[in-house]
Length: 269
Image 1 (cartoon, rainbow, N blue to C red):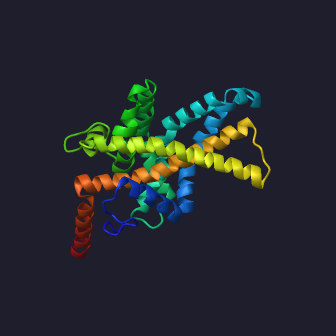
Image 2: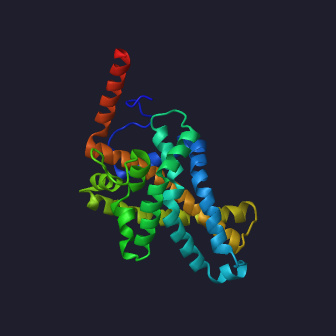
Image 3: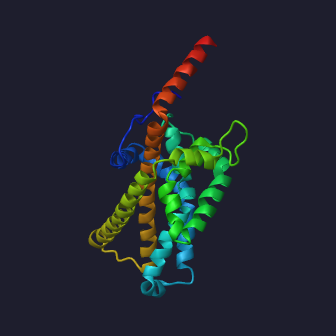
């Protein structure tokens, strides 16, 4: 692994540039990226479909489609950090490794699972329910998942170590205004993408296949669109995390120095 030879150029980019680059990364890593995303998302998608459709046939969903879609969005918002964890781990490996290994991704995921459950599922659920405080995990702490999964600090800091929450505070400190603007942009762009993809699939199914989905199938299709948008913004967020480390910590210089140290160590050894 060559730390100074990343598969994605390590340089400063704007948020809009990262949104554009996310499409290129998705195209470049298509199959493997989709497989890592599906590994995390599929169990939650099946669970959500069961929760939203059990004891409710087409007639119920026809009359209560707004409630169904509301709960679908809320469930995805709570589950997204855990469901996209394999995708984030894949991106972290793919940055330096040509062919990331599924076994290592699985081991890293299991080692991070307790912190994910505590800080991203339990804490996020507690903050989302009051409505007023949902902005904290989504806007003010956008890179908490990357800190947990890629930096792997201990939950409680020991002498000479920094805890996950302390590291999270350092990474996000002094950028609340910029994160707020990005959050507002995401809240505008994400629903537009969901609507565009949902309407497009409905039109294609009706015009090309003559298929009119029932409400249960329609609910599943809507959830699929939600997850596609979540995957896209997960890739964009990972790229923004790299940019944040470059701007705050000169990460590209750190990688270069670490790579040179490893080369010197091998030569001396």
